[in-house]
Image (cartoon, rainbow, N blue to C red):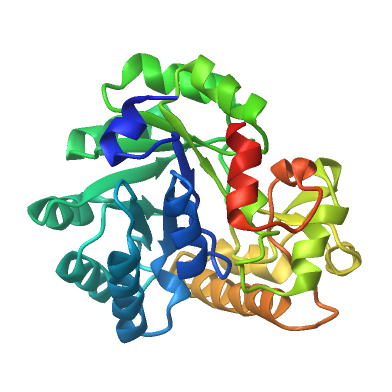
Length: 315
């Protein structure tokens, strides 16, 4: 399975364990590296810069020969920790950074100075060409089967369009739960895949057993889009609580979002409330079960160690 991605990151299989808010952690990434794939963690999973620095040092100390790890950065104004996170990551070093939700220009410039590669989330050709022009090393093509904040295009349409028009590797994000899915993405022209939801139900993930079991018990037909978490449409499992609160923004939120002066603050408040709800559901027993996941949980049949999940993906 040698591809441009395996060459770029010096890994055995063209797979990145996707960064997942609240789910990804050091143990998961260590297991990923030991099984021949790359692992990535959202910098926002750490409350302080000291905790982020400690995670970087732990991963570097345990990194196997041929292993590769990275961190995900939210690079827009909603992440007030961005500048400090970028500085810590560049100081300590890692193999790659994945940027989301904003311009990656500063990240690319700073990371390249210290030899860190930068991959950028995009959902269409317009932004793919922009990040390529800024010097990105690869593109994360987020399609309409991704978990969390997804794109609008099908995997095939998006990969074919980007691989035809861009000169850097395309990594497909979304819709991968088994080996056949990986083969399909590579056949469309992807150099690799970013896989998230199947790893929620891993032994190493430190979310609740209820969240993990939900990924086993529910399937693709149970994934719905909601505007009630971050203000931006996001995929979640359609639990009774999600059904109760609905998936559309309230009329007050819609009204405030039309006010140019208030829109930014409303989004920040909505994001904060939504993230707290998601955190509570993921880390403690609560009836307010807002569990983020993608349709690829269809292939999740048991809670397994990360190494066994990877084995299922590559065998």
